[in-house]
Length: 210
Image (cartoon, rainbow, N blue to C red; front, side, top):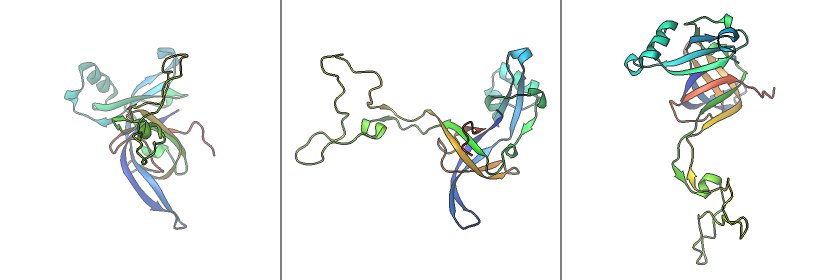
């Protein structure tokens, strides 16, 4: 399934023809460049590899430099594969822009969520707090973890304090509200994972509800 790469610019709002306000995320989508074509005969499966976002050539090692040079493109920061049915429709160095998506299309957006460091059980798992008054000294602790004398250990998967955020997150069935191919911008209804300038992978929705 062919997709496109991009980065999060931020959020804003637009108005539809009826005057309804729509919150949208702004994504700089592409342009991406085809850097490798894989087929069943040569690699065992059909796919294309695309690259996004320029970087200094000095920050690429020699194998990377040779790989990009073979495709006829400059050094890039991000390289991702997309499975496709007919890789022969593409060629090395081909440019893919935001206009591969249309307004009204449902998409899945994958990014890395904001890192929030170490968080307690109340913040991380939305657990209830203890009483705030009457001499209570139990406010934001995790509560009971054990399971009595059997099995006499803390079970795996118990909700506890720990690292929160900085995880791969996919938001599904987001609607493309507007496409600006000249500026390589997508306006997508709702929020998307990650901070501003965060790297994103965008595909057509696999569980489209309409």
